[in-house]
Image 1 (tube, rainbow, N blue to C red):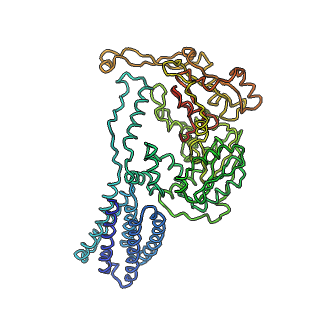
Image 2: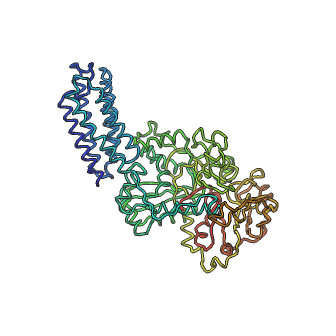
Image 3: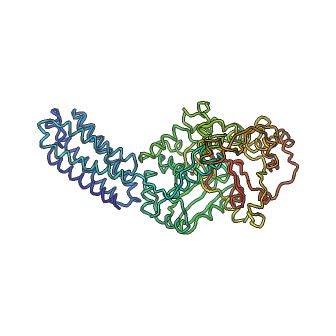
Length: 630
């Protein structure tokens, strides 16, 4: 409530200053060339622009956040038109000082009022500087009578700065230990990474909003827009469910942000066009009259039914009528060229009013390219910046993502397709997908997982939910940690992409199968040794030392094999059967519970066994290049 009181005070004082300036007749902003009678018309126009700006701003401040978004857009459009006309006339009459001050002050003042971010602080500061510039440029003969009036304009600028600073984050960290420094604690590098990750997570938990007002403030600070309608109801429901990450919408908002840069009519038209394109993996969901329904051509009706079950009566009561597309395949579907994507994000961040496409047929058309069973790399990186390593065929240094001994220290960057083009030869989907149907048009389509270069919107995988409902994990088949073998377990088929004689050795699951069978493969281990005297011994009696050995040293601890060869050309299928010895029977679901460590690896997209493994008493090791929404 406090920011609104400050903002209303700002508008009142600002309007008063405009009235005073208007009564003076020349706004205290004149050069020697701006004293002719021909300027009177311009002064009236300038007064009109200022007053319309003030009235619009008052409405934007007083009305509730849910209402003022559309009003703000309309108001900004009106203000822009008036400013353009006035500035043009001022320049034509040689009044450059007035025109520059009007443009800088009025524009930046509005931005500082309606924003709550560091950009708002910048806008308020620019507003302040523009008024000071005007004050210093007053003619000597007018300075005595105009100085006080122009000084009134300093007040809203200063208030804008104070208001912006008020919205800067003030995280509260509660009893979070500092992570140990490398080489001082005797910690294994993996243990240190785990410690640092846990400390970072505790910091995230400690700064979560505890009240609705705090959650709204944090939402606006992070995403530079008001929360959606019924945010208060969502907050109450989240509290009832003991949801702890109240403020963490970053993944969702990154996926949704480009769509604020496309007109609503174009989005609706593209969704309609996508269904008409005949892709059988799309489910058409419609919410109408607070009821949800779906239709699809694909046989997997259970996916639609599972997603429909998520729409509770409480949720449906908050939703307006709309239609949206859900992808029931485990492969994503959309890569938007970087220039189009960048322009949409720019419009979204500027809260621009986006007009519909002039050519509706072209602007709302969606086509799917069939890229299955071929190398789509050049198409998959079209969304990357032109100067990125993926588009420049360069390889960044691994030091950006790797810590000592090759352990990942920056997981997010290691999965960035634009930054790490070597992923093409490490992940089957990026090299030779099974059934990829790809669109380049920007429209919302919900998928369960995607590499970083895709623009699909993530939603929770229905496979996870369905397998929980099926009680796939049975606790009676599991055992306590102390009873488990000190081994690593993974058994699975060769999903991931379409294999040929030339490519199958590059795919993630096949590479794992070949690696564990190569007994002479050199790898690096670590052993615990006494810390040198006078070195680390003061804080820890031992340290970790790297040494080289072979896979054979740990072969007895690896229960890893390919159980079946699928998704392959005939000759590639035969070529894989011998090294993987696929004649063995498939394991039961509970076989992995005998091991303390269960590995989970991507298939075509996400892995359907992940939630079951998390429910077990084994530790789960996740290999993933296509993040989903857990």
